[in-house]
Image (cartoon, rainbow over all chains, first blue to last red; front, side, top):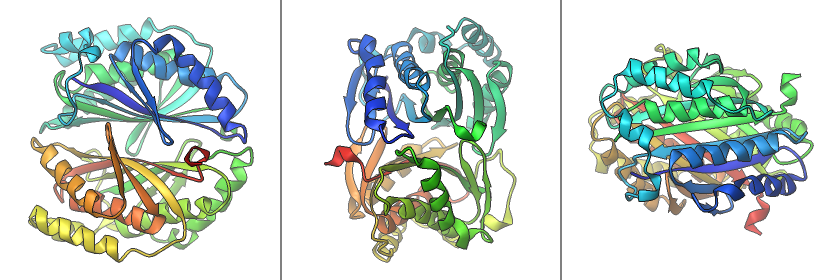
Length: 203
Length: 203
């Protein structure tokens, strides 16, 4: 399996380079666990979902704690048939999910969200989960939405996506559980995610 | 069919509200053709792919012509089984694509890209096309990538996405063709797209 993300951080300030640079410092603890490559549009991170989502979360939480309005876009992918197998992406949660009924996966996802750390960084997220290459993809999507509504981070449904709100710790744990526990464990699943903090539109 | 987008514009300047406001003026010609609703995270646009992609393109081109670094994220969706049918989204290109072989759709896509207007706004885009709810989704993806490589806007393949570069006119026509001509005409197809202009990383 190949698991990773393309991540872009967008600080809405003329000092955006400074904010991005200070945000990237939050990735230091993950340098030995993830392959990280940056170009002019995004940063590729490849590795197991535990360090991967932790790294994305900590990157955004670090900049969300600054005063400026900042947003982030993340394209998450697991199991894309066009990507090579990578042993560093091995994930026990995914391996165990194979054969677990939907109800059990929903309960495990909720337990993981309840155990999430508090990072003192209130954020907003909206995201879409895509389950590819299987006929009955909407069953898993609706099962995931049921989990989201019970997660404590659910804000509202929108066209094409779901809005979450809360501390970065619990919100990104919700996203990780959606990514890992829904859709076939060996299948191709992606997430299109946008995060926002300190938006002046929230008043 | 229901077709639309969630669109977010991110100007990397402390005057981001001013840039967003001037960008939104580019949507005025489309107000009567699209349903447009803005909240604190994104702007929903619902309607047929011709005005829809034109509106997204003109919004970004207008801000790309300003001096500041600006990015945009777009979640495009057609045929989501969870959305209601909307007559305003009717699209002849999609209707005709039903039953057209892949080679013919590729040729029509290339012809449309050749006829795209020049908007004097050089931009970069990276995007992922997702074909949902069918077993052989990668055939359509690879067929689309072949078209992209011949489109004149192809820059490079990246993990999880494809990079395009060129004028906003030809780049967004390439995206529209990818969105409409690949994947089943009546199926669920989405695009996760990021655009960038005036990035200091390009030197």
